[in-house]
Image (cartoon, rainbow, N blue to C red; front, side, top):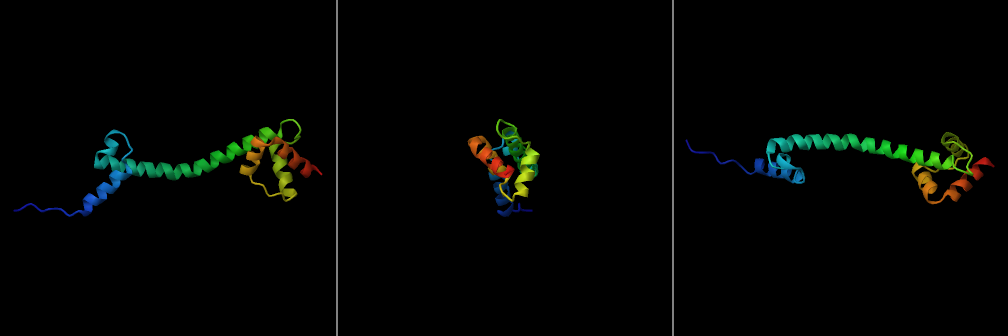
Amino acid sequence: MTRVRRGYIARRRRTKIRLFASTFIGAHSRLTRTITQQKMRALVSSHRDRGRQKRDFRRLWIARINAAARDKGVFYSYSRLIHNLYKKQLLLNRKILAQIAISNKNCLYMISNKIMK
């Protein structure tokens, strides 16, 4: 019985997976079976860490705002500052407030004074 020549579809699928795993180290970029396992693992990690990244950045912004708010001149804690921002309807998100706290503390001080009045 003659040998059956396989089509190009399986080869095309494997090359696509290999391109995804080309930066992986060792057998994870060479052997098809381990490439598929590592691809699944990488995709799971990236999906999980997208949510974790959002969480971590929010925690960082809150820590920066809190540190700046408790600094000299701004007699607030973070929770009071955010609460009063919402009461006065000053819509500044935490990312912007953290950037203001780092780059220009006087601006944060002016915002807090506006809230107090």
